[in-house]
Length: 122
Image (cartoon, rainbow, N blue to C red; front, top):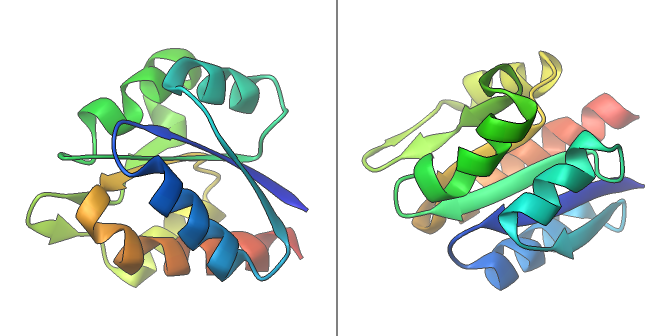
């Protein structure tokens, strides 16, 4: 079972539902405040962090960057730009653990990220 915490500033409930939907019963989702969510990731109580906000970086990833370092984090979408599927899959393969995105891009990025996370974990 893959444990994913949802932080960020916007649409946490919707993000959690999408993760569960695409997780096909292999993902456990916890929705928390940013600091608590990232501390769970840092302390090994969660495997991945997903956060959303209006910019895909600030409110989505600020605490993650501050606590686990920028090298472990990636904005997969910002206003007007979504990373390619190849770039997102590579980030998971390369060990990124925290992903930020614009809340309105959730349905574009979550299926790809979850698919690659499940592929990696099998």
